[in-house]
Amino acid sequence: MNLLNQIKAKVGAAFEAAGFDASNTLVRLSDRPDMSDYQANGALPLAKALKQNPRQLAEKIASYLREDPLFETVSVDGPGFINLRLNDARLGQEAYALLATPQAGYERPDKPKTLVIDYGGPNVAKALHVGHMRPAIIGEAIKRICRFVGDTVIGDVHLGDWGKPMGLLITEMQERYPDLPYFDKAFKGNYPQEAPFTGQDLENMYPIASAKSKEDEAYAARARENTRLLQEGHPGYRALWQQFCCLSIADIKKQYDELGITFDLWRGESHVHDRLQRMIVRLRDEGVLVKDQGAEIIPLGKAKSGNDLPPLIMVKSDGAVMYAATDLATIEERVEEFHPDAILYVVDARQSLHFEQVFAGSEKINLAPGVSLEHLGFGTINGADNKPYKTRSGGVPTLRYLIDMAVSAAKAKMTSGEMGRDLTADEQSDIARIVGVSALKFADLMNERMKNYVFDENKLTSTEGKTGPYLLYAMVRMKSVLEKMGVSSTLTPEDVIHISVAPERQLLLRLYALPDAVQTAYDNRAPHVLCDYLFKLAQDFNLFYHDCPIKGADDRLQKSRLALTKYTLHVAQRVADMLGLEVPEKM
Image (cartoon, rainbow, N blue to C red; front, side, top):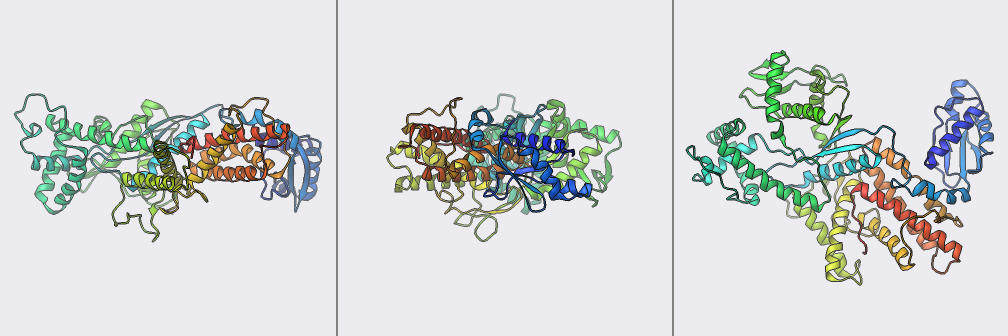
């Protein structure tokens, strides 16, 4: 049982011993660490319900807590807050039992869940850009947090690989290379195994094709027809489309790999095409689809908020199937294949209405009974002017630009001597990659998910303040301390901590607070909670490092402080892993 749960159990027992209901003891970390470590506030609402004096009631409960050796002091403050200060000796002795597990003291639930997380959302033939960074980084962190807690998690990139964009590319390819066999109706042989174009060609062609379709109705009509033929199985177009996907996915994977982001499924909208056609026929037969100005819709009525929801358009008047229909077919597939407890969508908050409609549509046709559908929205990345972030030349930054910029900034720190002293050129390059990518990810994750934030290139790789490099530097320092003292980082029952000064106590209490931080991050799908925790842990360690010398201390104290360093590294590495931050060996 972790420390907080131990304290809750003891406070609950004291409530019962005093003759009161122990169902809500309201134990939490104290707002006043100078007065206490933890605070039990349940006496106030209980006294109100019982119409008793809260301070007298709290004193009665406190009298039982004072008998417990875990607590150094128990006092009652204000109208009835019970302040608990823990016994230093017990704190140190419990360290191995409470922290040395793979989950660093977090207790996994008896009934873990199965989750599908839909995040990333890149599009075939389109360059990954700044708008793709947040869903990938946030989704990866949420996936890792959920797995740490014990859930079975399936991550799906959900590619945009179907529909009008593919028809536009086929049309533009047809205009540029009409002699390719994909466009020859009489062609009977095997289509080329290697694409006669590159991924960069596709990225260049798509915006041109899109612009043409807006200016030339004949071109747009051809694109719509080519989309229809592709979806109906035109062999040449299917072969061409497969090459679009292969080239794009290879480049997308490369960039995500650089960010340490992985997916279990690389499925796209096309994956449910056949299922979708069957669903539409079924909904027609059941009378669920309603004709409206030539389109087929699902009327939704009122949202849970009480507002009227626009109808869900399944099929447009021209026969084109809409994204909402694809999303419903994907929900059906995920429910049948994975039997999840929840499906999470890490998608821009500006898509909230779309997901509200899709979820309402799913409920109306009973697609996912008992499955929680959650839209985990997020805010935008802005520049210093608080407008959508642009490159210095004014363009929309690609993900490649962002990665290269962060790594280059870290490399500049290395070559200037601000970081990376006494490292070879190869070591500097490798560490610059790790530091730059971790800096980029932490700069995003440390912000509350739903809020917009200002991206500051100048502060990105700073080793001061709340930045990725500051955290990495603290962890590298922990490793360095242990290495210089010739001590393994592996924890053993002999790693007992003897608290002698306040910074040691503060650091140890921070380590014990991890389970609560993990649970809060998990419950709220909020990686920034763990960013805050890791930053405060690094601050506490740096204070301990400066105020509590290890080398030169007496043997008992030296062993204790090395043990505390090992525990801190153990916990910090697990939090860094949940956030997807790679930690270098040197820095």
